[in-house]
Length: 273
Image (cartoon, rainbow, N blue to C red; front, side, top):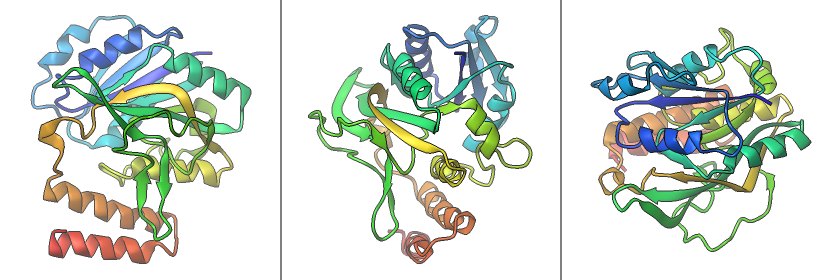
C-alpha cells in the first residue's frame, strides 16, 4: 500500500524540520512527501529539501490552506492508495502510519482516519501532557469542537470508534474515497474555505457519500497548535474568518444549526466576542 503525505507550510521553518524527520522515521514508510509553500515571507528554509528524491517542493503563493492542499493533491503520483494531510507542526509517533494503514485495510468503508492528537510545546521541546483532539464533535446547539482539547491526558478516549469529523492537522485518507467526494476541478478541499472549518466540510462530504470517519487511539500525533505561548490568542481577523466559515459550512450543508452560526458570526464581527 503506497502512501503520499501533503504538508502545507506558511512560515513554518521552526517546526517543519521536526515534522519531516518524524515522517522519515516511520516504521511504515511513505512513498512521497509533497511540501506546498503557501506564501511564506521567505522560502529559503525550503532550499535544503529540494533535490531530496522522496520530497517534492511546490510554491503556490498566499492561496490559503484548502487551495494549497489541492495543489499538493494534484501532484500525487499514480498508484497511491492513501493520502495524508499533515500540518507542519504535527509530529508523528513512529508507528502512526503503520497503525492507520492497518486500520484502513481491515475497514474499507472508512474514508478518513484521525488519531489521538496530543499537545506539544515547542519552547520546552516536549509534550504538553494535554489532549489536542480525539476527533471533532458537534455540541447540541451547533458548535463544532475538538473532543478533549485542553484536558490532561490520562488515557481517556481509549476506544476505536467512528467520529463526526477529523481534525485537519492529521487526516489519513483513502485515495479512492477522496476521488469519489472531490468537487469540480478535482478539489478535495473546498477552495471557498481559505482557512478554518475546511476539515469539517470535507468530513461532512465523506459522510454524505457513505464513508465513515474513524478515530484510532493508538495512532499518536503530537500537535503544537495552541501550545506555543505566542499563539494562545487568536487575532480578531482570524476569529471573524473562522466564524464566517461556520456560516459558509451550513450554507453548503444545510442545517438547523445555521441560526447558531449566524449569531456567533454577528457576536464576533460586531461585538468582538
